[in-house]
Amino acid sequence: MNYAEFYKQSVEDPQTFWAKQAELIDWHQPYTQVLDYSNPPFARWFVDGQTNLCFNAVDRWVDKQGDQPALITVSTETNTEKVYSFRELQREVQRMAAVMQSLGVGKGDRVLIYMPMIAEAAFAMLACARIGAIHSVVFGGFASNSLATRITDARPTLIISVDAGSRGGKRVPYKPLLDAAIAMSPHKPQRVLLVDRGLVAMDWVAGRDVDYAAARGQNMEAHVPVTWLESNEASYILYTSGTTGHPKGVQRDVGGYAVALASSMQHIYCGRAGETYFSTSDIGWVVGHSYIVYGPLIAGMATIMYEGLPVAPDAGIWWSIVEKYKVTRMFTAPTAVRVLKKYPTEFMHQYDLSSLKTLYLAGEPLDETTSHWISSELGVPVIDNYWQTETGWPILTIAKGVEDLPTKLGSPGIPVYGYKIKILNETSGEICGANEKGVVVIEGPLPPGCMQTVYGDDSRFVKTYWNNFRTEQVYSTFDWGIRDADGYYFILGRTDDVINVAGHRLGTREIEESISSHGNVAEVAVVGVEDKLKGQVAVAFVILKNANPVATAEGKLAMEKEIMAVVDKHLGALARPARVHFVALLPKTRSGKLLRRSLQAICEGRDPGELTTIEDPASLDQIRAVLQG
Ligand code: AMP
Image 1 (cartoon, rainbow, N blue to C red):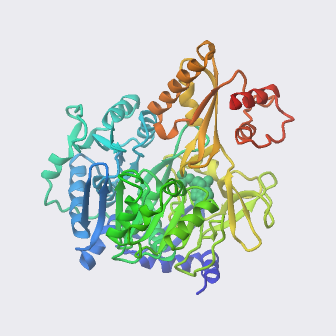
Image 2: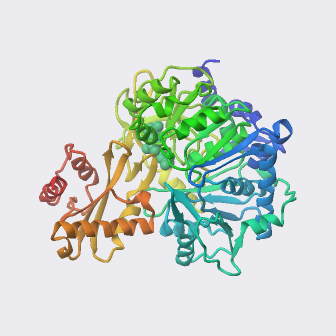
Image 3: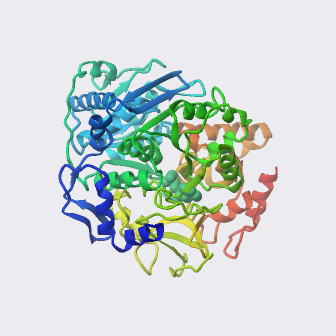
């Protein structure tokens, strides 16, 4: 079947199409209905079917290939490397599951996982899936405030964490940030399970904190049966930034997600059982959920978890991993490739990379220079994927496993099967013609694997994503895009106040709220500004209550550092603005709305656009002046 026919069936006859894809996973009890869309926009896939993510990722492979590698952990931070077979992984997951149960975790309970890229993090996720607990992984680079917001919203029974992570040889303590977050949150987890890596000393809270090594030691022979879940029960929550200061908990199901991943592993990533998949992302992001932990394992592949920098001990580290473990499919972000491009290509060419078949890039726009460079150096095709935390798997790409259609530079490709995509005019809601810019939207029902709802807030799900056009109820991606005459899509950036730094989504509101907490800040605006390496960086413009401290150049520098430190403490270094500028005025409309797009345009040296509503044109001159200064 060619791709056009495959796609057509997926959207015109989703029942037949997805029933076929559902054969790729194991079911404990068959579903009675492929899709229930009686309450749009809430889609329920594989109704009444019973399955389990952990069973599909681990147990079902134990009989077939129990001694084959399943999880490979490589840390250049602690100089450790370990290969777990499917059988060993099953044992470790059961030990972790038994410990969790002994700490009172049961089906439907939330477990917050705040951990670096170590094996126990994957054990914890899979153990939750095994016993029907809902995991909420928080990226290790986030600091106390970000963590506290997520604790408050998810109300976890248990938090699993570590003494420390490590970055570039520097130990990054996790426990003090976690303790501060728990102190800040009105919700107090009953227990905190800690993996002591021996990197830094920890202050243990008696009666609450539990040492994982000791607890595991008491559960070495644990046999924890799989808890079968109805396909539409929740598997996990993953928080993502939006336009408000409060991240949304993207909630995913069990059966639809397992089917979407199994299907994408075959049709998009062309992965085969027994091969090795290497995604350089982090378990704190959606890629880490879908294509480090669940996707590759569901496909019977070995998956690599890498802790460390892409350039340490040198810029050849990833390629040495590809050679050693005969990686066939690799997944990374354009920013990482731009970092590697700065180093001599010998770092890559000293290794035998003949196992590698395809490189997948996602998370941010892929520029032509980066794409050309990596593709010609590696001598393999580079496939761009466009997707979001919300969708859990690609929306636009070239599904090479179905048909090897040509790629177009600058375009992630064409709609992935299951997704009915349109480009709508932002104001009229009408469909845009070829090459006409509009908002990328998806018609309901969203395919399997996509978010079910916002955790604990169905109305926010509908209001945020589905009510943006008067004309029809469609899911908004909040991305600008165009579709060319051949049906290829091009993504042109976000329509909202979300920015993308090195492939990671950040809400400018969150950063503004953090900066506002500084005692001398009267007003602040944060915008995303184009950056050669990271795609975008955050830049802050601040009006101080008392501007005396920034009267001198040294004073400005000191205040800039102080403000950056506030963001580091609240949200983590990832959200730290690249620059903090001090101004006396911010560009606003007469009704007081910040002119973000104009501010951003000036930062990028572009025309600020339509300014008839601006309150004080002098505000823009001031911005230009500080940028030049
Ligand atoms: P996140 O949910 O953090 O993965 O961020 C999703 C957002 O990243 C999308 O809405 C896009 O703005 C951007 N994005 C992801 N992948 C791509 C891509 N391949 N090309 C362009 N933008 C992308």
